[in-house]
Length: 250
Image (tube, rainbow, N blue to C red; front, side, top):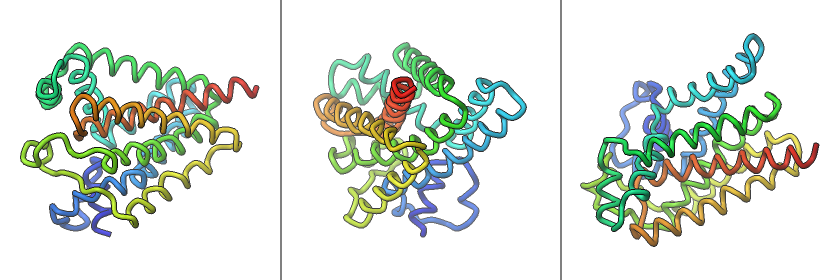
């Protein structure tokens, strides 16, 4: 239970830390609970989306839903995405890429990357009926977090533990943790209204493989920023798949 609490403390800005004091070593095993945190972040976002759409234009409700997740997570993943784009866009060597990603300042690649990400996120979901957009978010957030979390099973950490931003290096998943993560990421797919939409889940897996292959080639491992970026890009491709399937089946 403390490992689950540690995950909610780390991946959100909600005051879960008030419930109990969690020893530092528990934060090394939070990635397998990342998809479970997605149940909360997606749920709160969709509540805002559905409630907002009752009294506001659907596009405005979607913006409020997007803002909800940003507030709940403290822009944790978006910060990682910006650093990822800066590092891999501007770095020419392993050392340089890692140094850029550790720098707290945002560069042009990060700015362009965030604009592109938010633009695509909004345009994709706003092209769907509100009900389907909500179902896609309920499925896409936890599923993509689960897929992204598998990065720790394929790659080693690219830095030394003392060089990590949060001073924590995630432990590889045990068999039980792996199964728990799979359950937490696959169950939310049941929110999708038709079985054909399950095909959209293939795109995040392909995206994960391509991104982790790039990380393996460029920096011989992963960082926390890589985890956040992988989640957001996997989620984005999931929504691309949902929109394509919706368009084709109409």
